[in-house]
Image (tube, rainbow, N blue to C red; front, side, top):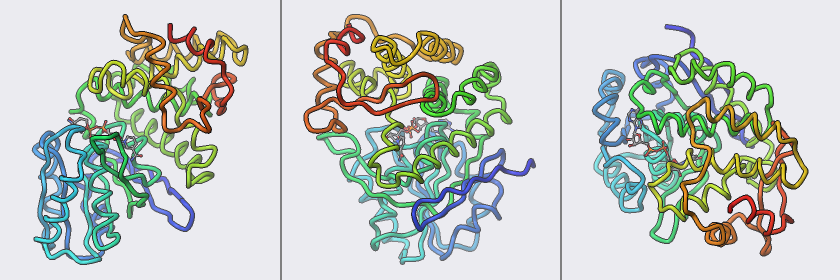
Length: 358
Ligand SMILES: NC(=O)c1ccc[n+]([C@@H]2O[C@H](COP(=O)([O-])OP(=O)(O)OC[C@H]3O[C@@H](n4cnc5c(N)ncnc54)[C@H](O)[C@@H]3O)[C@@H](O)[C@H]2O)c1
C-alpha cells in the first residue's frame, strides 16, 4: 500500500488529521486508532453500505457496535433521522466516549455529525467520506446539520471530527454526475485563490476524467489544504471564508428556479462560477482571458457551462435577493480580479447582474 497522504487541519484550539489514499477502509489500525471507547455506531446509506460497510467489520471486532443504514439521498437529511441515530446510540448503551462513524457522502456526514455533536452534548465523530464532494469540502470545517421543510441546513452545529479517513478506492463506484459535481468544487479552490492549481487541473484533466488514483489523491489533498488554510484564518465565517461561496449566489438561484434535484449542486456551482466570472469581466475587474480559462477547464472536465434554457432573469435575481448571505439589503457576491483572486462585493448594480442572467 502507498503511504497515505496526511494533512493536519487546525481550527482554533482543535486540530485533527486527514488521511488520504487507496485501501484505507481496510487499514484497520489507522481508523481504529481514533476510537477511544468501546461503543461505535456505524451510519451509512443504502447505496454505500452494501458496497463498503463490510470492509470495516473486521476492524470493529471486540467492540460494542451496531449499524444504521438510512435511505440514500438528500431527503434523508432530517431531524427524524437524527433521532434514529440517537435511538441506535441509546440501544447500544453509548456513553460519552462513544464514536459515530459516518460512511458515505455529505448527507450521511452532515446528519451523523450533527447527531454526534448533540448526543450527550458531544461525542466523537469519525467521517469516512465516499463522495468527492464530501472528501474535498465537508471533511474540512466541522459543519454538521440537517434540513428543515423551511430550508436547507437550517439546524446544525460546528463539531470537529477526531480525524477523517479518505479511501480513494471508493470513488471508483461513484456515479459519473456525482463525481463531476465534486470536481466543480475542486475547480473553485483554484478559481478563488490558486492560479497554479487551475493550471495543474488543466494539465491533469484527462487523468481526472479517468479517475487516476494518484492524481485523485493529490487533487483531494491540495483541495483540503486550501480549504483548511482559509477556514483556519476565519473559523467563524466572518470574512475570508465567504470566498468559498464563489459562484454560489448564482448557483442557489439556479437550483431554486429549476427545482432542487434538476441540477446537482456542483453542476449549478460550475455554471454559477462562470456567471460570476462573466460579471467580473463586464465590470472591468478581470480580463476576458480569465473567464475563458475557467470555461475551458470546466468544459474539459465535462461540467455544464450554461443554465438550462428558458429561465427568467428577473426570477433568478429575485432568488438572489433572498440569499441568506446578503448583508443589510445588499446583494453580497463573490467576484474575481482574475484566476486565483476572488473578492467579496456588496455594491454591484442589479442591471449588471440582470445582464449576466438574461
Ligand atoms: N458539512 C459541510 O461542510 C458540507 C460541505 C458541502 C456539502 N455538504 C452537504 O453535503 C450534501 C451533499 O453531499 P454529497 O454530494 O456527497 O451527496 P450524498 O451524500 O447524497 O451522495 C450522493 C449520492 O452518491 C451515493 N454515493 C456516495 N458515495 C458513493 C460511492 N462511493 N459509490 C457509489 N455511490 C455513492 C449516495 O448514496 C448518494 O446517492 C448536502 O446535503 C450538502 O449540504 C456539507
